[in-house]
Image (cartoon, rainbow, N blue to C red):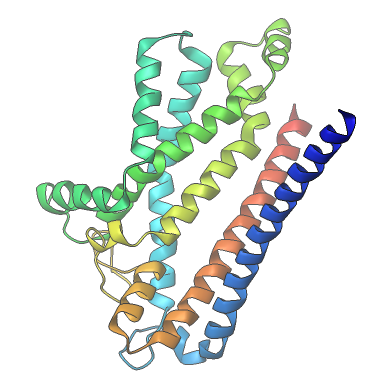
Length: 280
């Protein structure tokens, strides 16, 4: 009996290790493939201020991507984090409204991005007359990432031990002070994880933005101007078939941007956590 249990444990452990190595191997292969194909095309002309059919500059797309991330997070983060705080800290357990909200957010998470794009085109581009613009695109992707931010924030708040809240109440702190001084600082790593996931979805989105933000290869003069992001820029170049090398170069830039955003978010989370705990 003992020998059978050891054999099963060894088999399960081997399968787990095999899956881990396969996943790591696929990831490394993809990264190396993109780097090998794209690095030779990272020339100075690829980063010129203006886009032409000859240089296929990614600079306008980089600026548009950063603007899109900023606008989308400014819209989605207050709504998502605020909703999660209400669901965890203020709503009654077993509330039907809470169950409905959670069901809705889970449903929104599984909707394809093309549906969001069509919705954004009908509402923001057409009904509100915003046209193809960064504002229409940012509102569309904000709706897309709202369930992600909301659910990850909710899980992060639920992971904070109740003893933290009880200790704060025991010292005479009110509900609002406990939430913002004790609970939220403890949940910051989980909240930032959700924001990082949301940022990755904004950076890699194409279908929804083609129908809302447009594909103009320039930096718009305002938020109601049209502009393409890096992912859309890469899609357009690859679909044309004339600048495949520049498309791989754009993929390298996109990869570096995502890694940089993740590292920056980790540093910010560490400093905010240290500051909050030190202040408390």
